[in-house]
Length: 152
Image 1 (cartoon, rainbow, N blue to C red):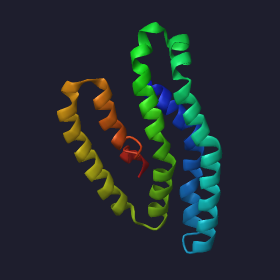
Image 2: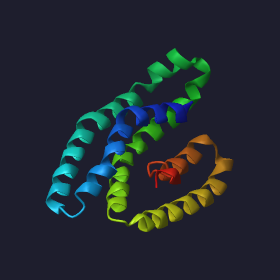
Image 3: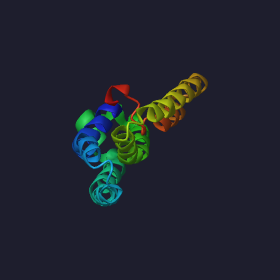
Image 4: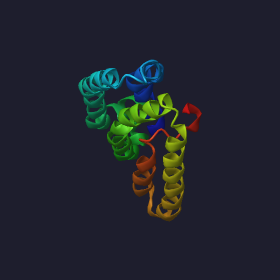
């Protein structure tokens, strides 16, 4: 349930930007001034739209989770809030990924992702016996980075 809500927020708030970033950066990969201009605009839009929406969803989770999903899902609220807040870095990681892709540096991104996933798997092994919230902290350490290699 938590992942579905987080993914829905991504699909609505972040995915539309992610679809156009790579083609935009690819078209202007040699024009660093234009890249800086677009990057500045994206950061403004992200700060104006995405961050308040994520913060609002995290703050009001205790109201809408029981309302839409039932009282049985109340224990998931701290995990949802954690994943929403830590997911706030996702737009910046997507920007980094698409800039690297536009400059034919996908290997750099892949190396960073490989290190993060390996570290995440090791931490999950040690944190799993301690409960859902510590495990969620570990999971969220990797999750803001788009760990889905299908994007590459």
